[in-house]
Amino acid sequence: MKNPLFYAKIILFGEYGIIENSKGLIVPYNFYQGALKFEPSEISEQSNAHLNKYAKFLEEKFAESFDTKAFSEDVAKGMYFDSNIPQGYGVGSSGALVAAIYDKYAYNKIDITKDLDKEKINALKKLFGQLESFFHGTSSGIDPLICYMNIPILIQSKDDISTIGLPTANDAGKGAIFLINSGTPGETAPMVHIFFEKMKKEGFRKTLKEEFIKYNNACIESFVKGDYNPLFFNLQKLSSWAFEHFQPMIPQKLINAWKTGIDTDTYYLKLCGSGGGGYVLGFTQDYEKAKNHLKDFQTEVIYKF
Image (tube, rainbow, N blue to C red):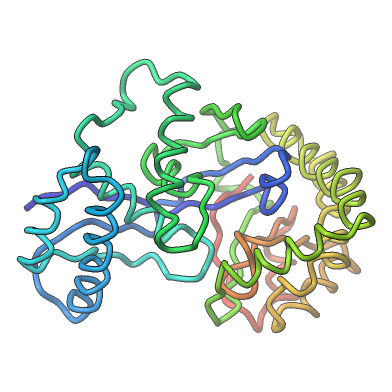
């Protein structure tokens, strides 16, 4: 059985702010991937058990839209999701699974190779949000959307989502966007709960709107143009704001490294997904210099410029 691969994703900008209608920029990350398979392995038993629970959810909620009979039969035959996407690291492990299930079992799939307009993207996002809610309680649908489409997505607002081209990477460049491994997975639900508790306070809502969203949107505008001076000016503001207001979401092991980046202006860190653990994103104009400060951590370049 040859099944297509579905890749991980990275929210470059917009974590949490997307909930409050800020802009978001999400890109595929092809270093990690997953596919539905039948060959038994060490991981297949556990994954198959998860799919068995998902089959019941699909049958209960989506029997009209999916071939739930075929899905249940394949799960009974031992089908599993063969994936190296780390769970709880903010790179879309459940999103890739949802995309794979939609691709194989949905009755009337939206063809992303033909005339992909905003209406179709929004319809996909809505359905994917419902499908992924099984894993997180609630879902925006963005993770499965990017995993399914495998092209960068720009979110202007909740109902204005489009594909976008990015500046060509320069593999010989000194600057880099990179991941830092905090060493422990994070859980989405508790972090989102902390965010919504903060949103009950007027002061936080005000600073989110007037500062975080302003810096976040400015970063996106600069990055898509390949305009790195204003990008790093706003990254410094964004990273400092997160250090003050998102500290409960910053993995504890990275608190000092986060502050060092701001203090030395060598690199700036931001959350990658909901935080609490998993990966954190780093931006630097001199990766070798940044690595010296971060020698105690595992880093992974995702884009050079």
